[in-house]
Image (cartoon, rainbow, N blue to C red; front, side, top):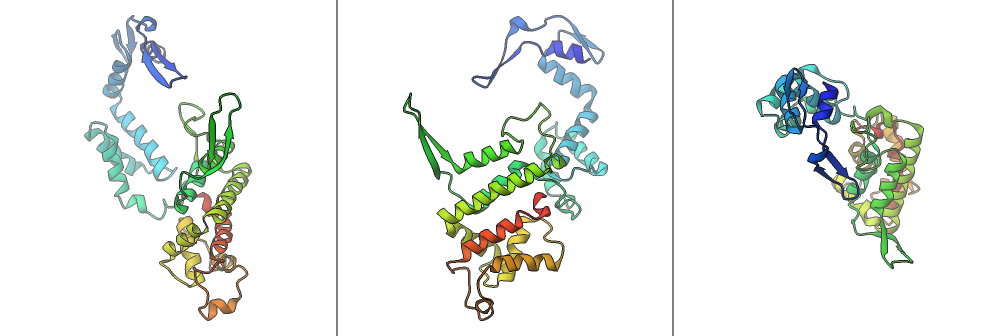
Length: 298
């Protein structure tokens, strides 16, 4: 079946220079092929039709398992998969109804599923930039091609893109047709330390260039609180799905956020997020948070 299917798929050509795919009839196998017991001069569309006709349940289950592992939990719940597969088949294999059912279900928000998936390099780096609301047009540096005079601009997005590549996830270039294996594969000393370095750079870059973004983030997450404990716990719980495990761990984070500000300023209500030091305090807190083991999960 594999050999015959390969013959049916001949003729398709990829132009990597222009990222285009075209069919060239001259290199297509026009002979009869027997796939799953059906014989004919099959082509690409025929293969898809035969697969869906003869292996409807297996295809529905397989794709729903993929979606479940990506969005919910690496450990499959067979009952939920069966329900999703039924929806998939009943909707002519449209994925949108499956996702709607999944995302609106109580199961999706079950405590067991929260914090069960390991972040990929993309999941670890890009969300921080989005939360900080860094403008996309910030230019870090420019280079001029001496031969053509073309100007190349390097922005923070490029820097994070390089970080993802160093961590093993080059955007839009998966290692094979199956994609990146994901989950626990991303947990290694290389990725952890590199991820810390790039996120440290991102927070310091924000502090040096647009510190008020850090201040506004703290205000929004804490509902404009002036209580350092409330602010700290709000920020921690936003970035870590299940929060920290013990009151002692929260107290350490609170102490980090308080930084070197004298305790009396907190006690008498003098301090608030409009203080000049508040953005720096956020940098210290964020760098503490990204080094917590649970930060690697979502």
